[in-house]
Length: 358
Image (cartoon, rainbow, N blue to C red; front, top):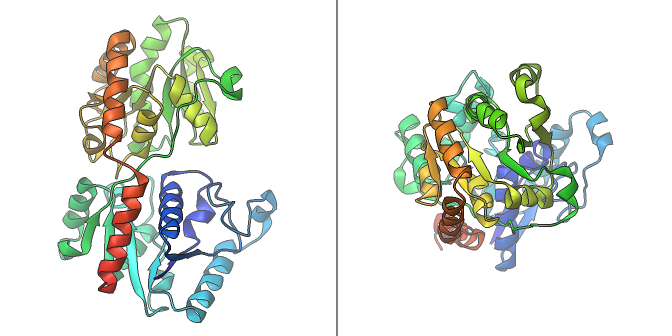
């Protein structure tokens, strides 16, 4: 079986859940003896640097039409090679009609449709729809995403949709070079802070907790620098709010040493950060929405992400109860056993074989 993964996510994610997913699946399916390929001339993704003959360099930002160059390179490769499966890493439909093999598409969430006009544009939705209808097999990352997909596209055949959960590759790190960058006590927020990520409500909820506890900080990792609106919002406790970007090692340290990780998102297709926190022994405070209860099970403290008072109450109660935090860590370890990348790769390979009639 020859499988091609394309370049798309490699150009727009240095780190992130989607590129992590493809990195883990690609390597595991390859280790099972299948002929997997991923080609690009320009790459900015950290996970794939060791897999490719191209590496991230700042000067790539000066090269115009990087996506077009990668696209033409991929199309040429598809014409020359006879791939059984093409599994694009995002929703650009350029490959439709360019190959004779089967098309497998992973739908990571329905954020584009739910939050149109906020964090996405119409072209993304249009392209995604084309890919969904062209796919011979659709993989979704949670039962909730499957139901959302069917609600937006009810004429899609349910038997062509497979649910494949994510896993986590993180390991706990209690001590490393990152020590000097972190306070001794902190609440952790990870990822983008766009509207559906619900950062503003989250901050308003923990602001009084930060004000009440002299030695408590907020560490926010990823998502770019704070914007002007966020800096104004932080004003009353600005010395206690820390932002940083982080590689996997530093992020693992951040989870491993946080009092708790709060994931207040209004919507997620899956929620890899929850598993990352479980892997590192970090108590989790989690929204009770979308797919997140599938991931969190009974191993988290649930919040109503629309209710600032509820968020404050649950976070304050958790970090003030050491015994409860220890119990949540143990529950997280048990819940984590339900999710792993080896199983995800096996189930993905089953999808490939099924669509090929094997």
